[in-house]
Length: 341
Image (cartoon, rainbow, N blue to C red; front, side, top):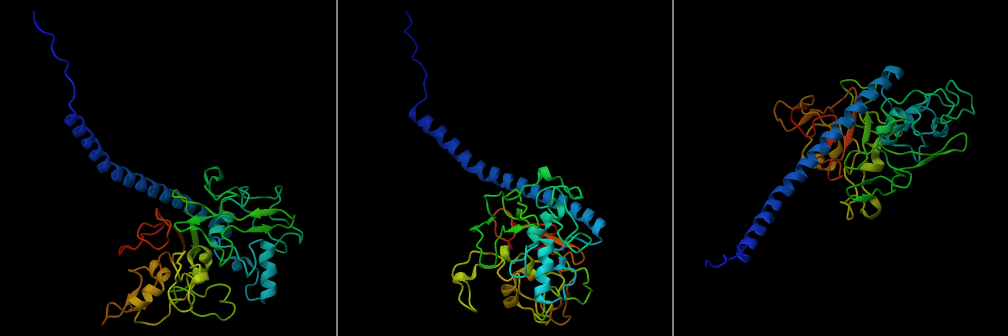
């Protein structure tokens, strides 16, 4: 009689070999899958910014200008004294000079309304009764300029964060509340990108010319409240400036918690913009258009007249995957740090 054949089985060596191969494949594929997921999110952020651009174009069609990113520009007369400016800003419910809403807040107001019922262009004393409440539900609101049900914003109990964690309140509250005329507390939220970070909004000056500086050049009134340049880094300084609590005066920060450290600083209108200035003024350098700027014919490294991207429009800016503004992974409505811009 034939003996019973022995049952075939995997040896220990074979099992270990298969496990090693599977582990190796996982190690190879996991970074590729993560990179693909990050690219998909970046593409989704670009779609977000594109939708916001379309909404801002519609807003401009109604208002004959893009929505301001500086709260002071909502005042009827920005050359008034500080007290009058404060009152006019409070009428519009965009804060005060000590705590103005940032561009990231104001674009939510303009595109969907702070309560998602649409934008109301009236304020007390501006074609409306002195007791007018912009946020009353029975007002003649405009329909949201982008679909409100698809908007991802910070929630009531979730303040904005970036790649360093909770945004500090050194320069202001990143998610303030404004009391309306009807004693209603309205939370000033911000749009979030698909990575979960705030989307910043800067409007170019509507009065800028070819000779206007990129950013603020001086601080005399009224430029201390709004920029005399094409862009004003202060429009979002709550989100982009250092937490200066532990920063030694005049020196580097010892406890960096924020990103484009000098977005509220001017870009001097002098030639010889060298590496030191670029390091000290990362926001101005980040938004500079390489093609539109003019350079010295004798020394190509010297910038004679720096010009920003989107000089007649606006900037929408996401911090990208790392949540830190000013890096190569950022997503914006222009080509980030590209010689083609």
